[in-house]
Length: 631
Ligand code: ATP
Ligand code: MG
Image 1 (cartoon, rainbow, N blue to C red):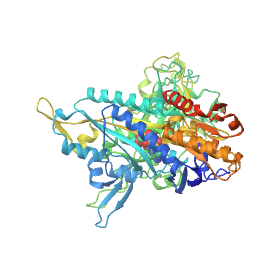
Image 2: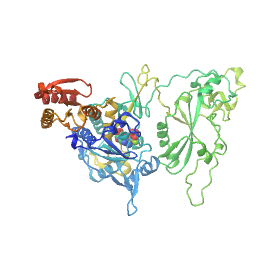
Image 3: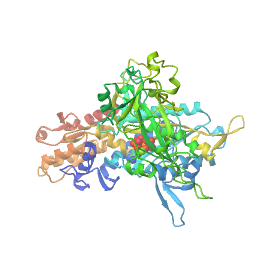
Image 4: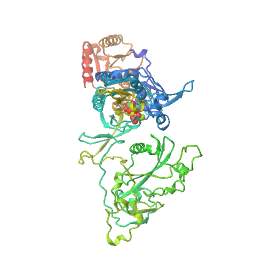
């Protein structure tokens, strides 16, 4: 392609809308153009990159035996109602664009395709003889992200490869899951990316085991915790670890103490001169379940730990049945305004204890006769205790009164364990013992420096990652809900076992830039660069230069090397700058040495240049490209 004939517009300044390097560079270099919030046009250079990534994805998928198809983006609401995800996706996460057609039928724009594919499998898969089966597509997905940002990293319309596999049993699923793990590793390696596969939370997609493929980059939205020995890596949303041991409590007797202005753990520790590991802090959340109930959740956790809201959401989802619900629509820390809706009196914020009285919640109004109570607030705290707080003895916690804490407190079931000295027994008030909530959960956030579970001599380290792919073992969540069964060898009708596997094609392309750029612009990995070479004519009025360049341009393309020709009437400096900015791996300049039958060959990544005989350019580049793509 000749630049003089292309839509080729580069910008000198970084557009104000862009925050991270890859977003700035793709805008400046004319790869993408913003059309609306989270909505981008892929301009010709970008489209070539996306097609190259897609081709690599396709080759690796085909190599596993998966078959390509194309599923509809318009999806009837009924399918999502069958799986039970319509409300979660349109109301709770609110991530699905829902619309009505002219007959007032509800539809969603596909954010993902489990429902559609399961409905197809239900109709077409009858027997174990048809299994296993793996279908994939490469297609635009729609998601109404709360915070679309960073260009293609988090768009509201983006390209994804999604695959769905069907199996007779778990063993077969595990085999395909392994194959996909390998395929994903191959894809990322071939695209020239540094990555790590990590244990992940399965989120609203559901199922049991899942792993994410993280491209390591400072701008990544995810935090990855890993050990040096390479044996453990997990998204912080999912990560587990051993918390540091608590410092034994020095508060032998139970007392209610005035602790003015100590509404944070830090201030309290300073005031009482104690360790945060001796404190039970109580964090209040407000959860709304899909049948409309609002539940106030009081989580007791050790003072040095933080609640992991993803784990908490999962724990609450497991309890949804108790509220006649299936999912949690929202989980928030109630602000002052939210509190006024249900609090019978102001809460002792910063001084809450595990035994905070239920009378802080206004009694529920009975529903009008014949109607179900909707939006009702359950007049009782749901009390959860994190594992880190269960074994604490003589701990410090809130006294349910502003400016006061209790020291030397214990859980009721530990009354036997903590034998106070004889002379202290009298001072031990009955209220020194809190009933231990029956629901013990693991909702703590693993932290950098924690000891690893698999080997306590290893400590967790942290890196930022961009989630490029996610593979899931779904099990029978969707097949069960939607009645997708098959007849097994014994002649029984049983639900299909499923897996699903996604790669963000457009996110991957931008992540490659985030991992590979310098002050001059993008440095594309050769395998996914829009063009492999660019021939630059420094001086258009020099006929010899024009002729040599045109000849090289034709020869390179004929040899299968995708080549641009910068034949614009611009200064040489502008051309070199643009070639660097758009990141084409090899630049060939028909400059001064042309008189000796040579051209300059510049490597974009290293900036190194060499003089090459005209007749050797094609061969030299072929070798360089083959070597770069093999790596
Ligand atoms: P995230 O946590 O980043 O929102 P997700 O868990 O919602 O991702 P999946 O549903 O597993 O993602 O989708 C599969 C892949 O699609 C992701 O690994 C990611 O690469 C890509 N992806 C997801 N959401 C977006 C988006 N809004 N823009 C671009 N790519 C996306
Ligand atoms: Mg998402």
